Length: 168
Image: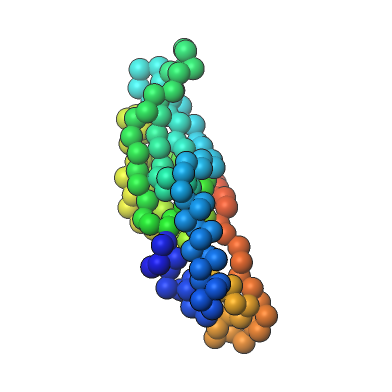
């Protein structure tokens, strides 16, 4: 990757387009830029957890929320792979007594699943997958390779993730 721009994202770009894309990614990830949070009310000792997806520092930050005082206290931080850009986080309901969190990563169009210890507020990444089918390429040049779709521009970024009540 070049400054968080994957080989797939670079494919078909001119030098000027690649420079513009790298500049945009570096700028958007140059300082804190929190986008979404998830509040989970299953913490210990009258506390809840607030999980914040921060695209700018490329991490998921967990705070404890004292429900009596409203005070937030830093608990831990989960760094993400270079160029991910975590944007939105959701705590999934338990499935077979195991809990997960899911984070959509805006900058590289991926989703990261984290195993989640709700009572302690700790999350550990277990898998990251692309939101774009493997036979597609995110191009800024205006053509989708291998599909014959001339002029189609895949210019979007992943923005939100949701989980159904059954955990899917």
